Length: 504
Ligand code: KIV
Ligand code: ZN
Image: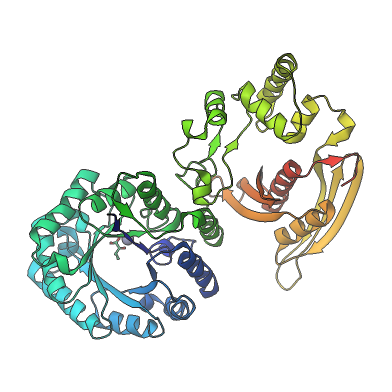
């Protein structure tokens, strides 16, 4: 018999606190609806007293998203709770999340108080919130650094006051997994009324332990996990939803389940990354670009023989069509042959060895081997295939003008030019490129990163497009961010659309 683990998503509250990640109400609703489809149980929609914008986002999200419980954060302050209750007025299912610091540091240096007074304030806040809603969650801020004996007193008091969920945050990301697991176990064994509430984990990733701590929390009795998409959040971030969900799903021996539809993970991750302008690191577990990409020869050969040789998760389970074999100078014959077969070529051993030799020479010069490179290597005549080149890019943008872009591409020997408008210069330039290639490509991911922080910095652009169900990746770096964006887009387009004899 599996125990259900409740997934409490705080992407829109703890995640949204990250500098530069702020969303407007429309964007929050888009993320909220996506979280609803993903199957999260609770959405922490915001901290209503913090700003009028946060207040109205909680109001609108409460109207637009009806399946999960909508939760609003407060301090243990009556006015915060009044405002949160007001913001939640339209929510079908609602929760107030109130709390106070319980560690030595917070009690002495933040709240200038003492242990007994903190317990009184905690109880009063829960009782006050109970006037408005049945479902009240209490957080003991910095519980990770709070002595277990005192933490147990706080938890017992707030449950007696009516808390339905007790949140044990490792606010500073300090705990080791064994320590955090012990803490949860201590509460289970020493709080008399613990059966009247659900224990929740809320871990931060300052030492890279957030997922491990959350999992040991579950193994020791927690039944709710507070997580964010892509692990975004204060400082080094929060526990990432996808890591916990896929850990539980992959370890069939663990008697726990969530109601998350894991096939929606990839889509939700991309949506959050794009709207929050927060790139996902390429090697991020589950959702990073390289999470299902194999580049070394030994691994590629193993994956081609049987995916499970080097993959513990079927990419389809997280919404990715297939794992990818990236052709580089480290790739082996098996991977090259596999790609050539997809492109429609079949060679005997001897010919394949010849092509493989040429491939290695080229791969040492070029980081990224494209399909048209392979076709050329496979013996096709030069003029049958050729890459696409950006010859000219001119943009008009600024305040009170309609953004417009003119793009000139050279495809084989043909020079093609188009002009388009858009909601910004990059959007306009992408539209112009789309006119020229006359193919249906869908932009899946678009990320701009500055390498350092100066305004004269080199901007890196990563683009992912989709064409007939396959994803293609493009990259460029340039001090001119618009040019880098268009080059990256063309890089991706040229991988999916091969142009023959100058015809599109
Ligand atoms: O990290 C933390 O302690 C929090 C609380 C407000 C729950 O985010
Ligand atoms: Zn937090």
